[in-house]
Length: 454
Length: 171
Image (cartoon, rainbow over all chains, first blue to last red; front, side):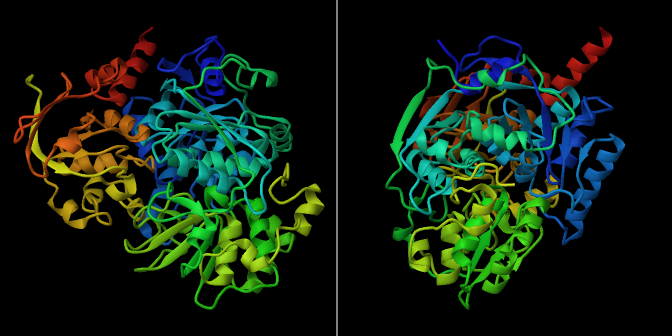
């Protein structure tokens, strides 16, 4: 019996030839990560184990992104505690505001995480790196503190659910629409404790950035990981990144081994043809309340947020700009754009996307998680409605408990900002997407199929 | 029932209670459990949050603790004195976090459907049995994995790791 992609990575990092679902393993971690919300308490937990130093100062990533740049003293103190710890431990991968961005956009972009890695992060959206084929999962601060001390963690080997998405990506349909559709089909606990493994023609066509978007929301189905075994597109993306200073741990996996075996055992296999899929919107208050944009159209909104670890990457901004070019945001709507990293910020600025956003009447802010979890930079007031490219639409998630969050991809978000109500991109632009000039120049490909978007 | 049985007032919740429901994200600018506990269920149901008392047993439906990995949520419940959380099922990270910080939880499918708000409930975490005292209904919980039992016996993850690190040094 062969192994799924998740089982291959876990076996390699446990120094075994094979593992099976339900096995409890102690595995070596390639890196661990935390932000200013979870890093300081994780540091406290590490010291409680009796450890004086982290196990490897080159493999502990700490960066502030949730409340940054800080607008209150409590948040600033969390950042200060984390910085003090990073200095004390002489961490090589601590990043200060201005030199980092939203963690899950920043790590793959900078080549800090790679295909075949096993890592944990004290943030549930650590699953994002599955988009480039890393087994990465979220934990709490106590698990992270223990891992900072030992460089290892225990895992129950999860069952794997296989998702084969066939067909050609329809106009204006991207990674966000595919994952909202997936969660809508299987529910918010449809992948509870399981690894989700994605493949098929539609996934092959999807850009690496689109796959990162999908992997990011595996947790919204309860998934332990959302995995996209690396293909040529992945390696092209990865090989274009800066080299990192450390090697993968555990038994070495060749690139050719980083695929599921043909006879791998899956707990369930889903086969969906997405050729006729429409852009999706998840209605309040669960990500599984997904439906076609037409079924949500006409709901009057107050704010649109384009950003976050889900959809704050360059491709997302390019798609939004394609809809917004030459148009303006409705009078009663705020459009907030937070490019997720400094590199994305600079490129969007240089390529003229910022001109499009500013001409449309958007507010462009710094790389930050911002309003996604109600932290800052666009929090909602009582009864306000927001179309957000982020990942959660729980009660009160972005502000007041009577506010409402509608999750969508950047195309629907931008179209809704112009219309002043939830709207399909075609209703604003008129026809299907043409290739945005900047993306065409960079990659020669369409907006959702670009390879390396640097 | 064994000696470590927990007895308390059942407090009912539904399916998919997420960690933002337990403690809203905007309060993550502190990691002080005392302060976090003042915001329990503030957006989701403030009356429920205010009336949640030490010794109460939360009885919830499926997928309890989904969403964010924030340990702030179980830490706030523990700070308030919640004696145990019983649910049809738990989200993965929340489940792990509870064992790590020593908040007793029991996975017991069917308990929420059978239970009435406020009724007396007895939970035997070791034997995995849940008893609803009004109806006399007894339910069997999902057994706790052996490794989790080791963690509990060690007093949680940190003492467990501390012992391993000490053993490594002595070698």
